[in-house]
Length: 199
Image (cartoon, rainbow, N blue to C red; front, side, top):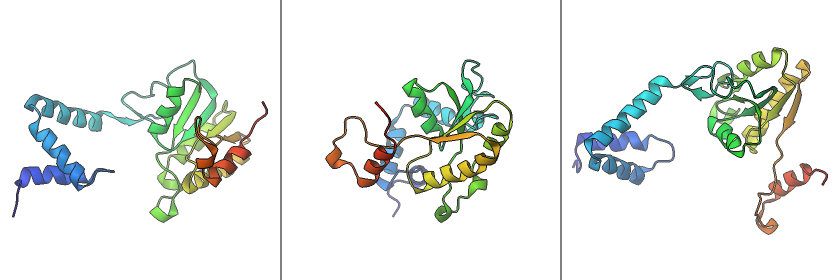
């Protein structure tokens, strides 16, 4: 028996396809939209379509943008000698929030994961190599996630960069600020020890 009717069932089904959205969350979102005023629902639909149609890859760093090059690549005050390699645009946004990093970025849009069928060709690695082969890049900062896939991706890119004579560094991993050592796992503690620096 169809309790809600086809349009609502279809809306719930579409929400359920989104990452991190289960059946109950999908149903909650669908009913939230159904109860929205018509103009708000139309504005949401228009924003989704505008983002889908207007967002593209930056031709330089592969970030998602509506302008090419993106605002960061187009900023002449950034240090073009440094390129921080991240897996996802959200990682780039996290570093930007620190207001500490003044170089450029390169977004891979994933990490090497043979178990999930993601090889190097599925990532924006060729584009990174093209950038680095141009004069001026002195250091690649690998800021991939500290997991098996992120480490594999960092090592793969490091091997590709070695013949080009570009310095490759890896962000330090370790104990979070404000954390208690007794609750930190062994791998994190080991990484913190490896990444120690002189005071």
